Image (cartoon, rainbow, N blue to C red; front, side, top):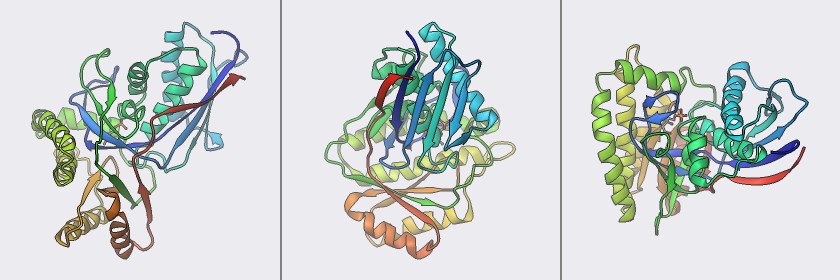
Length: 329
Ligand code: PMV
């Protein structure tokens, strides 16, 4: 690496259809089981990394202000990893902008660490394959390994070398996702803490570890067969199973709110009327509705009726991470 390099990268969040919940190695961020997700085309994160010989510490800015100390520390720890790979100790300035809400269970950490990994790798002169970029992004946030890729992606469990995400062909599927932003505030318990608590205390967790690989295999077969009904049913049941493991933790982790439940009811009601729509939820009360693109207007109209005040976001499959700008700082 020579001089003061800088690079900018853009990445999008992904929503898991088969969830990742629980680590077998917290340091290396190795998941207990594999997962499968859809990268979206909304709520991008754009991150610039400027390697600067004059800095005496990393400087991290988010949405125009200094990032809070805990989050900035995570960024610095991640940059240490990149610096070790690059064989340098030079600090960097990180400027990041999030188009969507942060830490609200809307996958901001996935887009955030995918963009940071790509920009930092470029700025520090690492020449990584997409597979190695996915492995690197994984070390920031597990789900970020999947945002390296466009559309559908599978993240494999395994060891440090073999745990990466790969793109998956979506064939003739015409997927869409409608997000009901019930609460854009920060979640009460981070996914990191909630996962650990579930693994350590939930009597339901061993059943999840046994069942999730089967769900993943069935999902891959349903995707290969372009069987949307099966894909939707598995998506909803897998999300509810994940939340069931958390409800069994001590103290319990409950992200589902009353409004989340009413959206689950709404999806069920719409299915009764012949609209193929299925719900999924992550580490927060917001609900994402998986449907096929032609059904998106009907899903949005039904949501507006029950949630006239809430933000509704319409998403389609989005691109993988892209380095948009490289240069000297
Ligand atoms: O990668 P993290 O630590 O943000 O965890 C993500 C966990 C879920 O979003 C709940 C599930 C998933 O597979 O994305």
